[in-house]
Amino acid sequence: MKLSFLTLLFKRFPLEYCFKVAHDYGFEGIEIWGGRPHAYYYDMDKQAIADLNSWKKKYGLEISMFVPEILSYPYNMCSRLATERRDAVDYLVKSTELAAAMGTERIQITAPHPGYLVNKDEVWEHLVYGLTKISERAGELGVKVIIEHLSYSEGGDLLTTADDLVKVIRDVNRPALYSMIDVVPPFLANEPYAECLEKLGEKMDYLHLCNNDGVTEVHTPLDDPNGVLPLKDFFRVIKRYGYNGWASIELLAPYFRRCILRARSSIWKAFSTRSASPAAERRCGMRITQEGSF
Image (cartoon, rainbow, N blue to C red):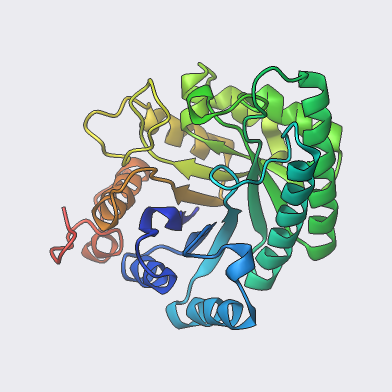
């Protein structure tokens, strides 16, 4: 399994700093947030893309996934407004092309809340139409579209369970469309992780890791003393399932560097069944004493 983290956590820092942190603390890659100031599509000219690709080489990292911002921007392919749906699909198709230019194999998309007093059947058709267009372009570029479901407290409405993901993948019916598991929504929906993995099958292609308070959508460090997620059980399920892809730390709060280190060591502790060597401890950030340590 390869580890990365979502750069949204570092949105107050330059994007290159995220590459440096990932390199210094032993991550194999980073998951790039596609919002300002990091990698918003309309800011990414040829020089910006060249800079990003040069940082990959400089720091020896992969880009595990590109995540265009669609929850805080006026792009909603499920909107009641035809103009907003059109703009959203156009933006996400272009963002897929940007993902290919970055050299990543994945772009993450979710379904924003469609608003109230709407016809759910019509909204579902809008979602399927948009994902079809995006997935067709992604297939041409060799990029996977990773669809994520959201908890209700995150603003999820159309895609909140593994069954919803299975249904949308079936309705879109394009090879480039895949799914992922964020550990929070299944827990809040009382869905066993093993059942999610079984339902998604070969279409499960990515993980988001964090802890949670069991009530809200908050994404806290894995070793949060107040966290309630059964993470050790989750890791056992993942190991039994044989998943060996990307696992990315997604912390949706201003934790910055300190929690990246804590989360990295938490993963090591969860997966390791023996004492870590000094080299492994250093790689996982377990004995770092400089600024930002724990």
